[in-house]
Image (cartoon, rainbow, N blue to C red; front, side):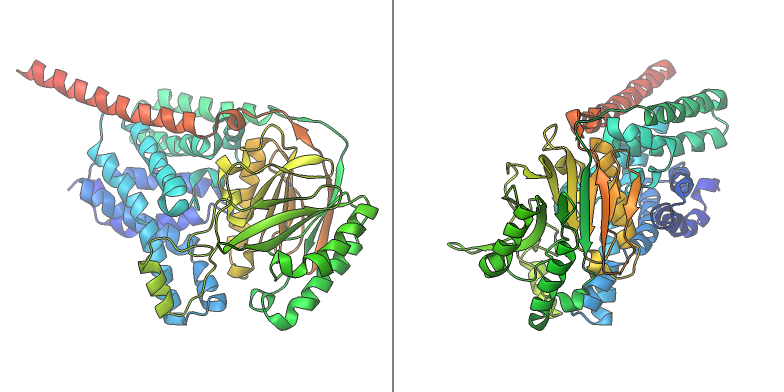
Length: 500
């Protein structure tokens, strides 16, 4: 029996998936991502397409079962579902996303050919793109590139983005498998050295530049528990808390509140609360960036929005909504199931993609509300005009889990891709300031009422990724896919002719 057909590979596949989770924040064992992928690619060699799909699925169960188990907290602790219902839905959630590594395994065997060392990483990344961009509005969690922010492969991010850098990581794992099999070792080791050396050199490249004086910023972390946030009896105290904490930082140029910091619709607090606050901001020469839900009538539409008050006033309506959190896909099935277990979720309308940039501190900035910071295409659509990025979010839904750490890690990618500082204001953490190189230069502790103050530099210029986006990289991988498949068929045809 060929070793690759051994059932030991099946048993080890979920363990490898768990090791992949350990490569991401808060664990940050980056090398485990490469080891886990090398194991998976090796497990697909020499087996049937069905067995490769099984191993990919088991790998996915290990990865998503451990890496996104925090959805249980949102449903059980804050969504109103019981322990059994929450456990079942979490299992279904992980089982669904595990289908994508299974798909990658199946295709890798079905399409195998002379260029397998490149073909398998190409297929993996195209499946990642399908999962991260298209299915259910995109779910890019646990994508390879995010595990490599502290390695030389991060140098590829401002050039190729998350999918390009992820491909280099997958290619590294694939080459490592070939080296272990004793195939063209010198050539492959040289290729790895060039890949990683180029990444290290690119890390020293500066793609953007400072365009003005530093901006003093303060981000308010109210630390209001999710199960208390929307209680009517807490509304006044919440407003007074944010007002008090803001007044303590009028010496900042920009003050930012977290996602839906105001537990009321805009029209309910506009005159009595926000108008006086806006006047105070003007007197202190400060701009406020505040997140508040907005309701419009005729017809009734709800928006998750950010407004600016002070010298500049404007509004941004969230465009990329969170499935099962801000809207229900797969209707009417999803609504029927959630009604059965008594989970009530938001019903928001997406804003248009052509909204003007908001301004604060004298510069336009890109607004990313919560889940929007995990999509690279959203962070570049306001460039080169935007001088920095602002993300407001509320990870209080996930308690003291690994999710806030993973979310911050993904947000850091946006700073690297754009070459801009990122200001991230959260309700319970992780509030932070991220440099244009993706480094966390300031961070507030989790689950504490606090304000994080620091300075950022407004940035100009464009990274290659900001100019091109994901399309060239994805397009090149599609060309590689069909090119390698065609090359394999040509070779097979030549062998058959020779045999005749």
